[in-house]
Length: 389
Image (cartoon, rainbow, N blue to C red):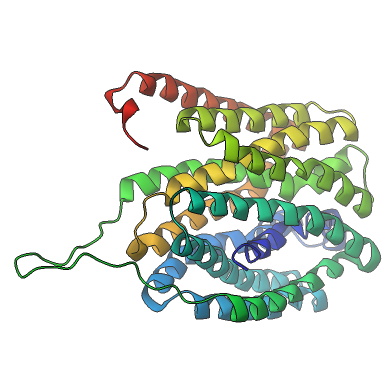
């Protein structure tokens, strides 16, 4: 029950990736329908994760974890399923705002609970397990969304949101409110200890997380359109091919448990190098098979980069500021989710197609990878190189 709530965040985008072409066709008479569907339906939840995650973290630090998590999941079920009964695109976008607010609470609080319950290497394994759970769930959610879309049209996948009520029951049974960590006893001559928030460190890592999230969500938000360009139009087939490519994410996450022994510069280099190689291959693919093969490599890199950034950011955060730190990381990750769909749509129009936009993203990844390896080489001879992480 610590790991499963993260699947709700995956549902927000993965569930709908195969219905984007169907929604394009259904709402094609609405001005700017591409931007409304990509920015409003697909990635609107992300902007509200951005706005509300820091607030969710603050509320979790101040009022506790468990009750806030359960309440958000109940609301999530009701507003998540609403588009299955709606025909107005703007009303659907409003429901997606509520989904985003609930997702911000679920992701922030569930991650914070893992940090509360565990410490050290055990905590890092659980955080990596959280990203593995998210990616493994996508393997089921994406093809399931394709089957429902093929059977019931674009309304079908929204019915899966009722699943969150099952998780509420599990949380009520198995999850308890954690006790605050013990504080040093203050003497008469010593003021109570305060925990300063590491703003510079967290903001720097959040900035890099935004870049990583753009890369991670680019396939999720645009895979249906890319496969349509290559001649695959059946939602079932799109869902199956997307699932095959997405197998790389859990593989990358499991590889993290071994690769995490590397210095952080080398690890970031490896992450973005694989993501960039995948994007380059996707941008130059001329058949669906070649595209899926390149996407598989890309997703291995994405599976590595998620736990890399999450563990790096949350390492060392005290109980009193843990919710805020997790909230800021979730917000930055959501910025990338929101930006990915809009950015790919814009780049595709400017560069002559979606596949050319993937090539442009590969260049960005190679620049980040090169910067990371330069940092690693410079840090190797630094006096701080022998210091603990």
